[in-house]
Amino acid sequence: MTIGNDVFRVFISHKQEDHALAAVVKKAIQSLNKDLIDCFVSGVDITAGRDWRREIRSALARSHILLLLFTAPSKNWDWCLFETGLYTRFDRSEIRSVICLFNPADASPSPLADLQGVPANADKVRALLNSLCRRTWEVSDDWRRGALAPDITSSKLEAAARAIADAFGRSGSASTYYPCHRLVLSLSESDDIAKGIPERAQVILGPNGTSGYTMSLFDLAGGSDPRTWGDLLRSIGATETLWRRQLDAHFLDALDEKLFSPIEGRMQAGGMGRCQGRVYRPILYSIDRGPTVGRAPDGAAHTDRRPRFVTIVFDPEPPAARETSNG
Image (cartoon, rainbow, N blue to C red):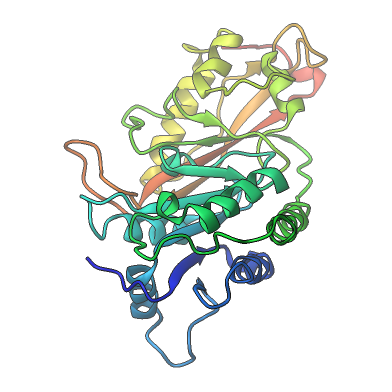
């Protein structure tokens, strides 16, 4: 596939509620070179009455890079990941540039873990914009007209980076308070889900993900290292417990859209933190699905129903009911 090289085109993928952020990002990037840079904002830059699916496919085909604005792991990102999947599958033999701009307090989505991720703070965004302006060929191998803005001033780069970082911060500040222990896990393309929630599933930290207080249930609060579901289970000796087996069964039932009874087993919190000795009922709260992104693992079919995020809630038992623990 050949992309026209008259204008450098950026496809901005975002959640509908983040349209104000997308507008700021578009304005900031186009300000770097108004003559050569054109940004398409998914869900906004489509003429009324047009076939929007065809319009999006056409815009993706013309784009030199796709910029995904990933504001919070707790949101449903099915459509944005679908757009990313369309973009990366146009030509498997070429390296297509996908950049995930994500909240510094969180992480980029697991399906995009192998692609370029940029935390949305001013320094990192400025470095990205500097590469885009002065070493454009490193950002997209489809561009043939050299550097977009080799003589851009530091003040102009700083203003654009600051505008994006500030807008991202305002978008991320609209976090929700969850009056419960809430664990958010991210599943990758290669995770085996045949037997339940995979132990390799990554724990998503942050205001809209898993809090440090919830991590204290597993004696793992305060650490900066990435954690997996398996790390949490092993920290409290719960890999073979009744509640874990029942939770896996609920996960499989939910994938088949079946109803299930409450878990009978209980989880006892770790013995080092302020939650020491407390007993909780684990509840499978939600499963967010999305399309297969990029190349599926060997022997696996592409699907639009792949589980992407799993949310588990831990409901505290009243003292009188604390007769069982990790059983």
